[in-house]
Length: 280
Image (cartoon, rainbow, N blue to C red; front, side, top):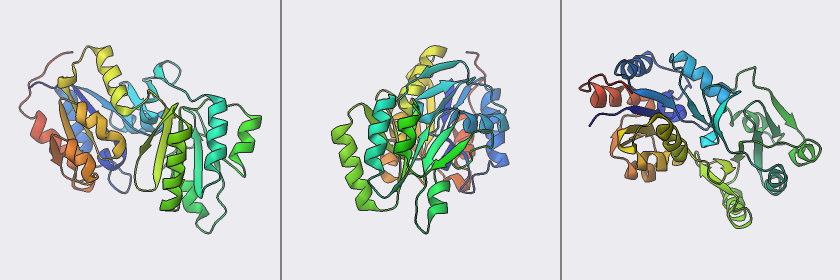
């Protein structure tokens, strides 16, 4: 089989646990590009952060960011954007602030988060959005709900970090029951991302592939989180990292090494080494 697109998750997949790019990973992406394979990053990160990673990889392609809610090669000319309604966001944030959690409303140009008054407040601030560059303004306010009443925002995503498993379970039940307009994906046991219904990594990959004239069975998708599950399941070759949850690994065609064991470069070596160059 000849593969024409490689869709790669960033955190837990492309990056090591220290949030750094390994030289072997950079070389692997360059090798795939030499085969005339279209490489895209598929991430929960905002566009600026994903673009920074893409620049380090010498990628000048369309990126699937904010869990599929913002797809673009340039921030000013998105291929696709699916925004949350401002009134819905106000209601959703008011509900979430009743729970023990840190909430961040993420726009492609900035984000606003609530301050969490507890001894691990610093963790609350820093957990979501690791790698935010300085040119992406992040503001913390005492009450996010009050801020949104005075400032109408149509974000592409709402990030939530919970500090208690029972609180998370209760909050997710409420969201599922009261807000059918949104989709929730878990990035790990404590964090979740909320986007408008219709946005997802899997749909983003499919949309970009359609734009490029690439069939689903010509796509290799690799990731490690629950948000990557559908993307991995639908790809021509779905690859999960060893550090992925078992539920994600079950839908994969193949499981590669962990991100700290250079799982992406190992997968590239095994999958693409015999593939000849092929122009899109």
